[in-house]
Length: 302
Image (cartoon, rainbow, N blue to C red):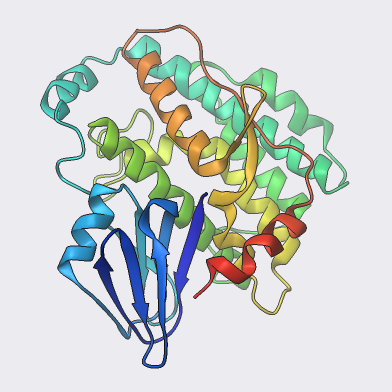
């Protein structure tokens, strides 16, 4: 079972015999640690013990903590998730321009294809040019089809002239959702023993997660979909938090998003290491997202 646990209120979190123990001053709740994929701490009035932090790290739980405005500001990553980390770093430094350029091209193509799929799922008008962009992506996306497609995609989803740099409710929700997915990628890359600062396209000197920022691109439209569907809800963050427990298609096999990320990351790394020529394909499927979310509502939110 995959669960996203959200801590909203003043609580004390500790570890006991394989369980996350949550005490809010009135009652104690126990959650089996092996069931948790993501733990989000939204309240700044939370006390967490060192034994729990260690067990969360050992169990590869994606821990995300937020500031007083509920904005994700940090994540927990283990330093010893993979005993081959040093050897993998040497492999990473040998990734060829040919492989990285081809991979970025395919990542961009997959992202645009998923943007088209999102508009299709929502029964919105799909610009013909957006579809054409998929086949117009060159090596290393030299003609910036990724940026052009994103601008067109957002203008259809939200409004003409929509700007990701504006301080709006929509952008807040998008950033929150992207942070949740990014944390899942950060965990998987750490578990695989690779350096997250060394991206194939993202090269930000202040970004410690350049590689995750590269790999996660095809998953971003899934966040866009949920923000569109639930931005006007009384609690729009609730369904967005559940995204790691949703199901998508990876190479036409249905998987939880959290599981798909793990398989997907390992496939991309094998490609970059020249161990395979096959790249995985992420697709979104037409499912009743709302009903799936409601099924997790009572036992995933604390």
